[in-house]
Structures are given as structure tokens and as C-alpha cells.
Length: 68
Image 1 (cartoon, rainbow, N blue to C red):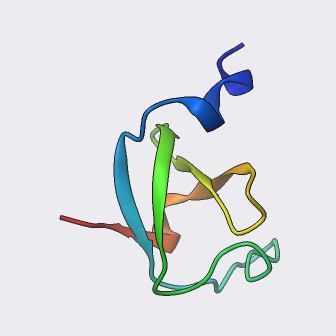
Image 2 (image 1 turned 90 degrees about the horizontal axis):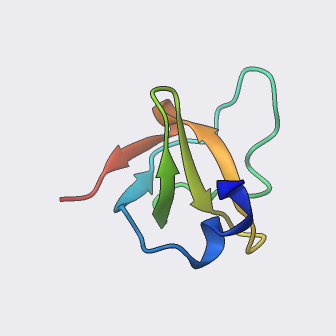
């Protein structure tokens, strides 16, 4: 059960939130455009980051761009 240790795992990479224009869910409460987030896990479709609430949340990759 990998999700129990996500918050303490090493950061894979950093991504910058580019927008919070969600079609279905309200993400503007937990993501801030322009802010850089640490990616703790990743799938083909989602980044799992520590969001503004301090918890790990899964978000579509189209909200972010990779920070070089």
C-alpha cells in the first residue's frame, strides 16, 4: 500500500501549476497557479503532489508543466 508512505517519499521531480480550470472538480481550493509542487508519485495520467492542504492529492497532468 504505497499511498501510506507517499508524503514521506523522496521527491521525483517538481512541477508548476499552470491553471486550475477544471471541467469536473473544483481544484482551485487546493492548487495555486504559478506555485511549484513536489511530485511524490506519477502515473500516465496523474501527478500525486502535496497540495495546499498539506496532503497528497492526485491531479491530472494538464494542470502542470515540468520545472527544469
